[in-house]
Image 1: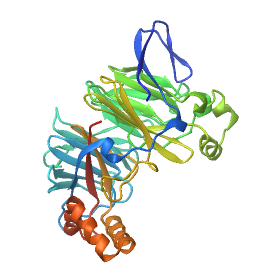
Image 2: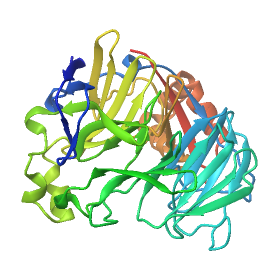
Image 3: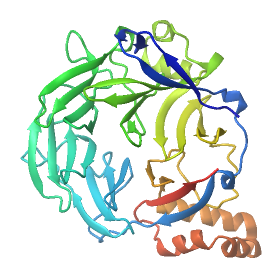
Length: 391
C-alpha cells in the first residue's frame, strides 16, 4: 500500500509550467502505480450505506444531478444540462423549492454553468456565462435578490472570503491570460493568477468536481497532477500525485496539439484527477487510466490506503447500479447518484439472471435496496446513494 510522504520545498515552487511563486510551501506527494490497483470488496471501504429518494411535486421534474451540494441540512441539486435549474430539498429528500428562471431578464439566465451556496450570507448564486452575470437568490426561498455583471470568459466559480474565485478553463481573456480570477462581491477583479501555458490555450475540459476540500478550497486540474490550495487571492501546491512512468510526458502538449489527439493519446497515461475530497482523516480522489476510472483512498493518520478501480471493486454490498463518480461528501459519507429507471432495469435483469427462487433470496438479503425500489416509479427523479467511508 502507498502512503503520503511529506516533503518540504524551500525554494521557489513552479506551478502550471511557467509561474514562479516565492514562498515556503509544504507539499504532500502521493505515489500511485496504476498497474498495482487491487481488487477489493465494497465492505472493505464502506461500513454503512443508505439511499435517499428525492421527492418533488408532479409539476417539478429534473433529469440529472450534474452538481450536488449538501449544506445547512439541505440538498442542493443543479441540473445544468437539461433542466437548467437548481432544486432544493430537505435532508430527508422532501422538496422545498426550485430556481427555474430561463431568460434574459433580471434574475434570469440562459447558460447556467455553476452555482455556489453561501451559508454565511444566506445566498445561493448561479453563474450564467450566457448573460455574463452572477445571479443571487435567497438561500431559504429562492427569491431573486440581485445580479452582477462581469466581462470575461469563465466556466466555474466558488466563494472566497472577499468575494468569488473564477476558474477560466484555459479561455484566453487577455494578452496575459490567467486561469484564476479573484473578485470582490461586486465582481471587480482583485487579482489574476495561474498563467495559461501557450500549448494549453483553448484546451477546455469537463470537471466532475472542480472545487473540493474540507477546511479550505482545493482545486484539481485533470491534466495537471497537482491539487492546489486556494488562499486569499492566491494559491499554492497542496498535493502532488506522482504516477511514475505513467505520468504525462513533459512535452505531451507540444507533441499532440489537437484536442482529439490529446484525449486519445492521454489514455495510455494516468491523468484526469477530477474528483478530490477530504474527510476528517481521509483523502479520496479519482483518476483515469486506459479508459478505466480508479479510486485512491488514504488515511494519513493511520498510514493506510486503498487503490482500486470501478471495474474490479467487488460488489459484496448491494448498492444497485451506481455511477462511477461520487458528487459530494456529507460528514464521512461519499454521496453518489443514479436514475430510477436504471435501477428498475437492473432489478429486472437480476430477476432473469437468478430465477424466481434466487431473486427472492436476493430480495430478502437486500432490504434497503428493495425498499428503495418499492418507493420509486420508472420515470421518477434520480436518487442519491450515501456510502460511509471506514477502512
